[in-house]
Length: 66
Image 1 (cartoon, rainbow, N blue to C red):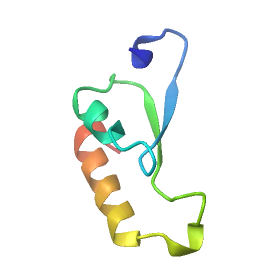
Image 2 (cartoon, one colour):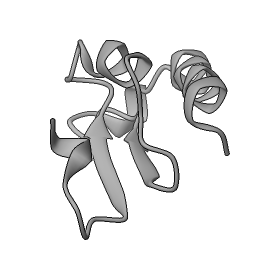
Image 3 (spheres, helix red, strand yellow):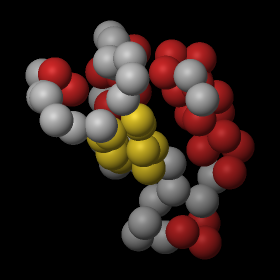
Image 4 (cartoon, rainbow, N blue to C red):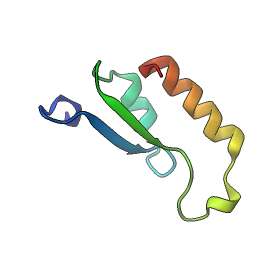
């Protein structure tokens, strides 16, 4: 799994187009690593569902922490 690579301090994942990304994070995320969460659709940033983005961030916080 990619999160087991040595020498990497953070990972960036797409939670908009990556439909199973949240499920993978729920299976485990390494302690001491940073998570950069893409929660805004870069193809149309003006039509972002803010409530959905915030919900994803809260769920991630409960798994990974702040």
